[in-house]
Image (cartoon, rainbow, N blue to C red; front, side):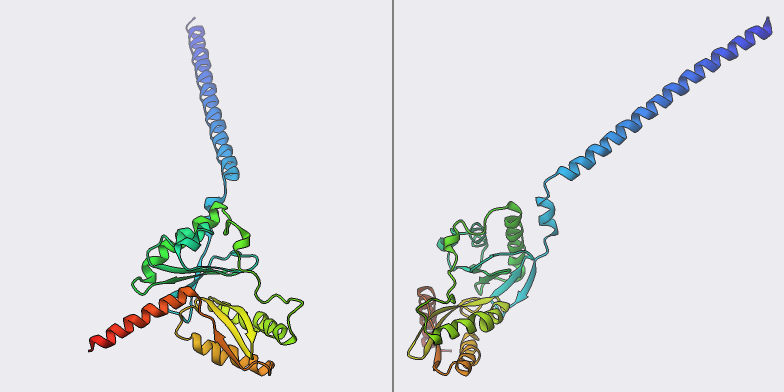
Length: 267
């Protein structure tokens, strides 16, 4: 009888232990299934999550100096304009571009130029690039991540000033070809650009843009660079003159007035 009772107790304990092990194993399987489900859900969410933020974080914007200390070339590593160029010299004109409008809200920005793969930003003398760069970087990255167009209306892009027209003379065609193939690429490397404004009485009229605008070496660029090349290849060209628009004219007049006041005040 004692042996029978002992065997019965052992059997009961064995059953209890077995049920406990089975229950524990079931809980482990449930936890494992839950963990795997969460992992799969996390992976699916990561795969389906919008990648705009990731694109912003991985965008690497390079900067290059220009001959103009107050202009800096920003290279976002993506296409800026597929065709043409665009320049903004005040807040009013910047309304044509969401990015330009945002950049003009940064203290110190005085001009913005959009090239094929770069953005040239000009500042006043009272601000330092080291303080302005973080805001400029953020504005550029946020814009390209937003999916907004660079220009609200593509008609606001500057038309190709060097396009060949049927009524262009042979000399004008040669001037445009040289400007487009030899001169413009070199100037855009420095964050600037040129605009052909006409050819009359042997004089080629050009307008400087971007970093070239207001640059102290602009005259050297025009005379020693552009003028010499055009005269060398086209004998009909006698000289090159810079066309100054109303914005620059007002700026130069104010500078002359300031210079006169400084001279009159004496040492």
